[in-house]
Image 1 (cartoon, helix red, strand yellow):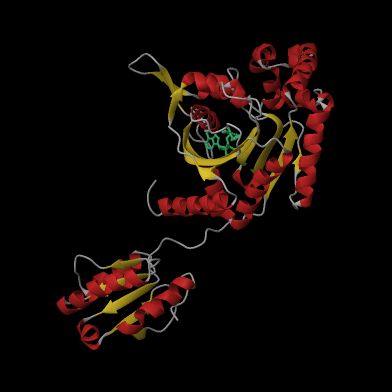
Image 2 (tube, helix red, strand yellow):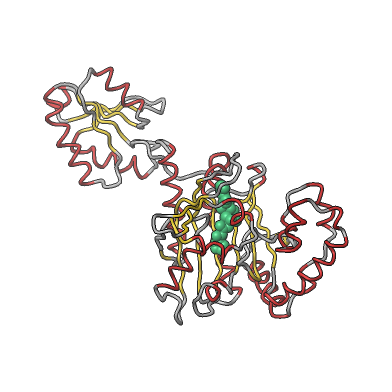
Length: 417
Ligand code: HAM
């Protein structure tokens, strides 16, 4: 990832970080490698991720390790190991590369980046709603309007077991219409059959019994309360009873944020509740919910229809022609940096003619060239040349330059006065 792309990433990361921290989530930094067993036990043995997508190897001790395909499992593992879940609520977030050996295409990569947000110790739908509203606020802040929210409930383990029986009966009755994947999963993980992307199975899946008909009253009440919160918070949602997610640890609430702008890989963010996972991995029973954003996809969307405040281009490029100009200019630039910590100032290095320095200034993407020649250095002023606007050059005294640049920074660099 090269500049200027890396600058875009930085600004996106800063924006997300500020938002999640404003909701009280704190950063947890997780290792990229975990024991393979962790992902098998959490994501599930019979999932695409564990069956075909993990980068797994045996290390020099003979331990099987895996490059993390997602962050939730590692977050729970670390939380258990460090006692983070004992009688307390935790709101955590993380950011980093994840690895899945999928077929690469636009929006789907073998190394991609997620921001994950996880809450622990809070059983109610209020925190599900908080996680969702946080996402909505992020899309709005990034100028994205066309992101659709789909929600569903998976109920609790007992209801899913009942549902599983009904589903197996239904699928078995239509065995001749199942593809090879579905036939295999019919035995091991029938809910996953509903996940199939095979268009020839779409009709069969559409006619399958619905999980919602099997739900326990508690899970239904949780779902109704979540919808109530979303209504009160002004969040539009679409209920999608077929939304099952590709990881096994979820119960009750699941949701995805989807854009139609991105083609086949339109889900920019996904998550849900996973109340059983902490206990399943050896901790005390702890309710939990969270989501992860796919940053590549989000950035694609921001590029095509959103906005990221402020570019990382320099506000100004200091052109210094001649020894006197250099002698005055360089210490002066340091003084400007002292007074204006947010100033992005590129001071010319390596000499060069007026013309070649101006060319560098232009290429740097700076808004302004501050031109300091021998006369200007002697007289104590600079010529300010607007590089991106059709506007007369102006003369500014060195003593007033700091104030002048402050205005440039405050107006996002659009105007120098
Ligand atoms: P996930 O749905 O597997 O969930 O991934 C979350 C998001 O990561 C996806 O919606 C997508 O934007 C992005 N993503 C996944 N795979 C790729 C890929 N190969 N290339 C580019 N982007 C990708 C999880 O990972 C859960 N850990 C989310 C979660 C957190 N649930 C609760 N807490």
